[in-house]
Length: 54
Image (cartoon, rainbow, N blue to C red):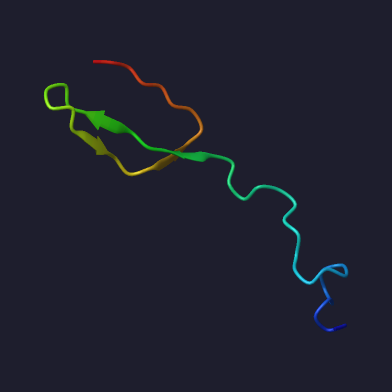
């Protein structure tokens, strides 16, 4: 048991101090105005998202 708890301050596994990721994945959804078919794009990690209608 001593060998199992060695190295992490008497814990069996290391404790995560903070979050690993600072951003979340944002996924864009494109919707057809005629048939309302939805297509999703691949998620990209972004801190800020601005969507403007062209």
